[in-house]
Length: 92
Image (cartoon, rainbow, N blue to C red; front, top):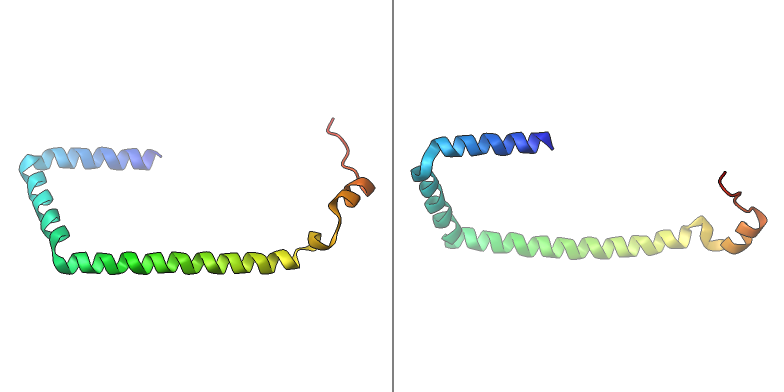
């Protein structure tokens, strides 16, 4: 947490020293880059690939969880009977 605060403080001081003109220059450059058709296309492609990867990961996790659930040792036991045979003592 301290590192984040120190980083923010350093950024603030350096930004304040750079002044408003430098800030405006950075903002103009950012807008030129963000509005560039090639950059927009690349960002759209990256977004689509990330979306596909997220769905694939979700499907894999869902499938693996079903496989693991089938192999779970408690699946073949009656937990109520286990608790009745080996009750957990109350905490003192």
